[in-house]
Amino acid sequence: AQSVTQLDSQVPVFEEAPVELRCNYSSSVSVYLFWYVQYPNQGLQLLLKYLSGSTLVKGINGFEAEFNKSQTSFHLRKPSVHISDTAEYFCAVSEGWANNLFFGTGTRLTVIP
Amino acid sequence: NAGVTQTPKFRVLKTGQSMTLLCAQDMNHEYMYWYRQDPGMGLRLIHYSVGEGTTAKGEVPDGYNVSRLKKQNFLLGLESAAPSQTSVYFCASSYSGGEQFFGPGTRLTVL
Image 1 (cartoon, rainbow over the protein chains, first blue to last red):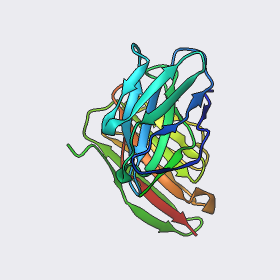
Image 2 (cartoon, rainbow over the protein chains, first blue to last red):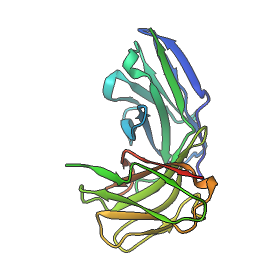
Image 3 (cartoon, rainbow over the protein chains, first blue to last red):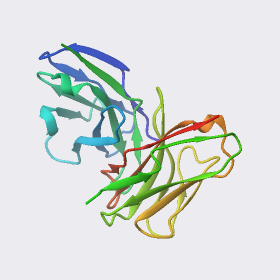
């Protein structure tokens, strides 16, 4: 089964600073990759996804992620964070479009004023 | 569109009681899922369904049952609740796999 690792459980960062949230997965076969965001007491909302094509994927709220097949990584980045970005972020991987998603354990991003 | 809705939002049970969580989606999605979310463990798949009348086990199915009698609804049942089932439960749906749309969650406490 697929394994998804989010290396940092908590990431504090000052407002307007850049941030990178790391995600690595185990499978070497073709994968579909997703980042979801969860605001306090809410469900998960899709930030961005990689299905094929360009390895740099842009999502909502100024986030982007880069798919690196050789390193089996899909790190999430934002050049300048806002207080409203404080949330938990989940990386998820699917080994095929019709297959189930495997989620990482999440990274809690806290933006400090 | 309401998207994915879950009922109830909160529930407190005593050990041994039973209950059913209801998930409904109005997007005509084929696939539906039930997850539980526990601190430090991310989301773990309990059961899923790839179409009306079908169900399948996920990663942590023990202690739960599901039914998909109508395409738009996916029910999660706990026959005899245990404290280990205290969690936040999320339902999700998707058109054919891949990107999933999530409900707001149900916070369940088993005493």
